[in-house]
Image 1 (cartoon, protein in one colour):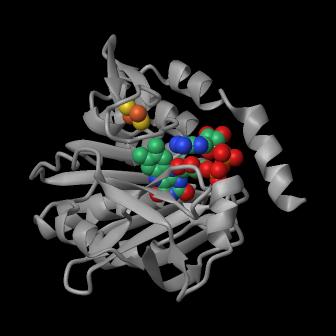
Image 2 (cartoon, rainbow, N blue to C red):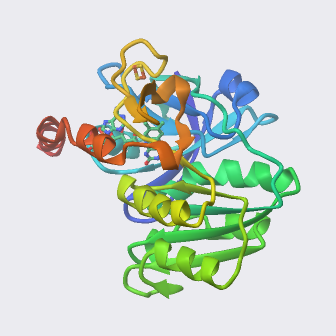
Length: 273
Ligand SMILES: Cc1cc2nc3c(=O)[nH]c(=O)nc-3n(C[C@H](O)[C@H](O)[C@H](O)COP(=O)(O)OP(=O)(O)OC[C@H]3O[C@@H](n4cnc5c(N)ncnc54)[C@H](O)[C@@H]3O)c2cc1C
Ligand code: FES
């Protein structure tokens, strides 16, 4: 059992939890994730380690309430426990000592982006980020990014904060203004990562993405998380979740992510009674 030390509501669908998990906190690196089961009958769901504190022996998760398990998780409070947390899983991100890197976080994608950008900043790399959200309420972690980034650009669909439009509009504008980036790290919905990669490919900017296929064991034993990268089959839980975005077959990822739509819907109806 793992104790929830604190819980924060970031917006109406996104919450943060700091959890006591000494083993994971001691070993985890940016880019890695955990698989948790909320209670003893729960399914296993993957969530990125959004932050960690080795001294306090804690890991932070930030999750969007999208279905059965994330809703059940959201019903837990500080002081409650979570049944199982396995990790750290996946390969740590390969962060290079570039001159300047641009991070792009779409919605809750800002959470998995944060530990990578924080580490780059600690390595002395100049980092800028673009954060996107439907409205200003959906832009998360802006203050945390401002502490470590040179520039933080915001894009919202309705223009309630920053640029009115998509993160890709801001990306194109920055490149056209002559900003030079050695690498782009994009994390968010698959459509967003695909659109970012289409632009950075044109401008020959290496781009890393973090894939979030359906996972079960998270340890390389089932292939449920398989993705095609550069024409080769990879298991995101052990070969990733970070991959070269210019080589990812995004269409296949999107098809596979929709595989259990009906069952997921039925489960959620069951929970809501
Ligand atoms: C490596 C990795 C890191 C992730 N990190 C985060 C994170 O930091 N924050 C966050 O909010 N979300 C993250 N996700 C997505 C998160 O796992 C899903 O939102 C969650 O599993 C949904 O479960 P549910 O029962 O609430 O929703 P469901 O109703 O079951 O599903 C809703 C949608 O979530 C996706 N999904 C469902 N089951 C899984 C599964 N087992 N694995 C992956 N995706 C699934 C599908 O796209 C589905 O359509 C990550 C996924 C992966 C693979
Ligand atoms: S989740 Fe089973 S191999 Fe990756």
